[in-house]
Image (cartoon, rainbow over all chains, first blue to last red):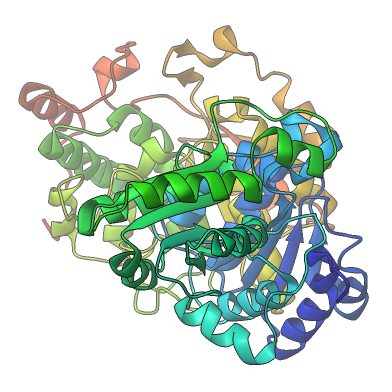
Length: 313
Length: 274
């Protein structure tokens, strides 16, 4: 199986979604033109590049959505949230408008572009807005399924795509359940590993190593950071009594804190986090950066052993 | 025409004073500066129907100037979008009339707005969408002059022009004041007309408290030739109430005494539906 890049899916998916829905419009803050070549040829009136003006683009999206359009807004995480947050908050999240935000290169996968381009706090910013669905797909199959699912949901959503090639974890028969109810990718009774995005792949590698050490790990793809798949996580943690959360994000405010606050409230267990501590990113290849910031299966194995040792019995 | 609008505006002014006095919170000087503009728009320009406030082909008004919303609410109540009684719950918990315009709560409010600098972008979005759908409605966007210091407004001004959104009309309530003092002493806007012209806009200037002057300005931009239009309306903060006209800076709520005094100054003429 060759690895695929998520943004390469976008043209086919949106040509298909755009054919089914004549109210679908794409607004681009000058990042997506190369990903949507066929879409912009098929629907030239429904692909609008507003240039390097993210705040204007988000406000325009709000206006179009309030007039009944189904707006998909494309940018990068750092630019959309950094510059567009005011409009996102006041003009989209608070009124609950139907705007879907798609960003590429969340986390350190912006690689060589360096710290400014590497958004490590996007999940915290979007998750804390009322009523915004936050999705971080782990592979191309689930990315497509998630895009198609949020296309028929009303209300705001934020989807973070990785720029790194990913191996397919799902196929057409398995993806539906994974998306709808977050059933575990790997079942186990020793430790629950919740992960999103590329950290799901690392978690699967970690689970294989843990198995050799007689710890049976259950891996849950928490692609939906908000709302959290609470039932799936709780069901697992009831069996395992401990939890690890792995994310390509700051340790502050992301999936880790979301899972921790839910478990703290409903079923406190030993929990460990694999995420970026209080540091900005920097230049480097994505692979080097993932290792430098400790976002690897080795770290997950270590965290899982710690959590398992302290597990609730 | 002008004299009847003047009488109407005077009686709506009193409702603005009453609602802010009642709420003991809200921005009355800001609302009084934009009031005549709103009266003119709702009485003479906007094609809207209170019985069908969400009609797809209606004209829209996007209120960027959040502090001016008491004026908007009083005008909408007069047009019959909701009961005048709702004015007396302004800013209270659960009220129909929020401290910033809320499109999901208030009939006649087209979109939620009130964060400075964003309204023109929202107006462009509405206009783009209506153009795609072949709808004829026009989009009016009302902003304060201090708000023109927000960079996003100029991002959006480029968009209106580049996209040839001639259904968009921006109205600037140019009262010359912002929170910290005179606009031109804090960050100069002039030459404002030239700035808009250089961005590809039709420009008209007017006295924002004189209905025949407003009428002339709106008439002058009827022929748009693919360009968005801006009307720069010179206004006075707290128009009609002496302690604001004479320079009182504080604009948050009114005491009982101030409310009484303002109502007295605004005269005895009142609306029939009192």
